[in-house]
Length: 225
Image (cartoon, rainbow, N blue to C red):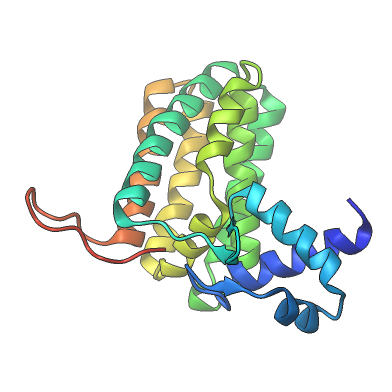
């Protein structure tokens, strides 16, 4: 990938994740090229790469648009993540090294500090620390590339970023406390504790994004992300 294309990929990703393009919005090559000050060629390549990343989808004769998920799809994503990342936390607790634990604790503390300022926190920094924390747990779990591949297939950057946008101050602090507790469970070498907190952490994020779950038989909320 050329430096120019990489720069355009970052620029388009930033426009989408910041909410300047909503779910389902079409991304025009001419418009993006003008906004980013480049020709259409690197924009076309960037859209292709972001589609492969899962942020966009490209339809023949219609171009690229931001991927939209239905409530049912989001329910499934978070339910699967809770199971898979819960397993990762369990395995990581059994295999984590002291050095990895120290790094996880540092990330948890930095996340807590980043969210402690209230609504004025730096959302991009919170997003970065959150992604690093979850990624390091998967790394500590080991077991080759299978677990990593499964987790990566479930982690959609636009979902995560916009989930953080829905967090109020209480939800953000709760999320940060979960990180701290997961590290405590891992230091105690208690895999059941770590797994339970990780699962609760992700189900809590689901609730923040989707709101109260409907009673059985109720129609789904007709919104997308």
